[in-house]
Image: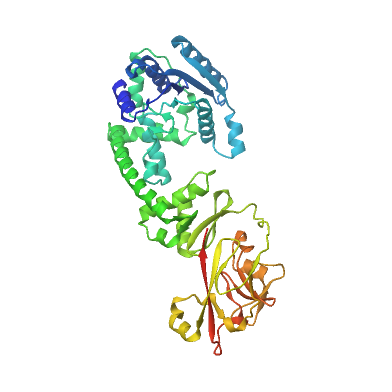
Length: 455
């Protein structure tokens, strides 16, 4: 165990610039071996750091939880190690956050670790082992994880280190026996109430019957997957920044990416915009579906993904309420019309003969008969009571009803650019041209509307 732990520490430079290590200490075999190893063998690293421990009482097992706490105190007292005792109510956290007790305990533990290790040069050491990593691999495999998920538990993340990640549970128990380390067993580890326990107690033994060296074999697979994942991560980082433009994402460039890179880039887009919810594979599939059919979707934390001007955009919808309404309007002019929302509406005028040559390349929704509007035409956002005459149909609808029917995202409605002339709507972004202003046999000059997003 000692040589494997030392190799792991050196390989990942776990103790570089370290002044203090706080060991997550439950009193079980893994954490007892880790605490003892770091304290007793500190001389192998020049002994330039302090070793402390933190015991977290989850208050889940009554007298047994108290027994674990007292045992941890006794262990640390013998070695003269400073011990931090923290108590949490996992059941209450689980009920409040509507998550399982196992997940609630994990979240609470890492919040405590973060608070304790906020000073410079302080590391948190957790006693995750090779056996834990194999269990995590199987659990993630059962959930349909990506390559990154199958890489298991990282040896180092931020200021959290895992020196025993290449050590099996059997090797840890042997270390405890040789060094006469007394440890306690958590009875909850032997029940099948938790999925991880089912993997540990039922699945792993079956696999070891087939291959007694299953854990070390799987470890080689995990290390291979890590190398592949690291390379793909570098490629996807470059791709992510190549499609990003002022917080929006070029949808054509995104669709052109190879699927394995595309999935990673979508994951980065979601993480960048939705930071308070965990990313799940189903969220990536939702966005991929959006790329194909352009239907607006709602992601966790009530964020909405929509398509605009060739870009994928994400915005927060707060309780489906309308955004504050700020009316704006400008006199319409040929060429550039920079709106308040950072959208440049470009009006290009061309004779009908030129339009007939180019019409296949132009969006028919974004053209109107220029000769039918006056010099007093304006471009504005919507107003209460707006009505619109549908193109090629003798039907007039309220704009509010039309936006609902077309399922235009709520957060976009107040700032949809509208061209108006003498109180009548000529054109609406994303909807098209009013029936009164569509091209006809008498049209001489065509106005072509182009949009350029400047934000």
